[in-house]
Length: 167
Image (tube, rainbow, N blue to C red; front, side):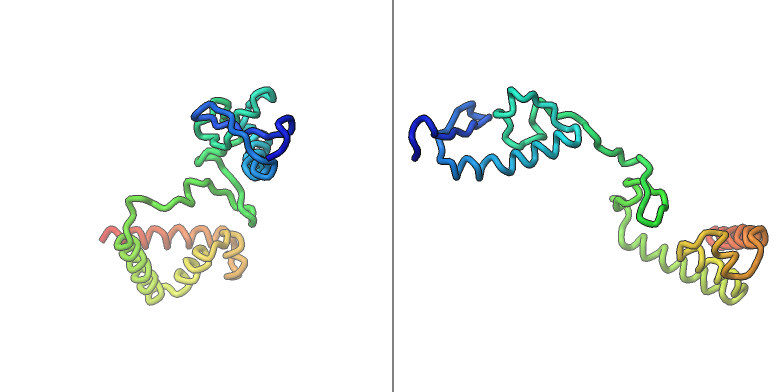
């Protein structure tokens, strides 16, 4: 241990006691806390006054100085790398959705697309382009047709598929 004047102490919040430690232990204990503290302050999630920073133990969930900061709502619209809008809620797994439901939906989709391919090959191609993520404009250009024609065909295909599902 060091000289009494230079000895470091760690504050244990739940016991409200100071524990004397070496410089090495002090730094190992506080560095991750300081990093977390700085990040929380930068994001507006920590409003701890400078005079109380010694109280911080890195447990922000139970801290009285915790603030909401720049937390994002699950419903807040965001953009992905390609510029498409989405919300975080769309990325969460459905807790009620089972593998069987997904499998049934997948089989139904394949059956509908197979029927569509037999009756209307161009309609199947339209569905494929839309499922690939192309916009109506891009798909119309790919198929060499006017956008208004594409929109009319796409609406007719959706109606036809909806009627097939209801059967």
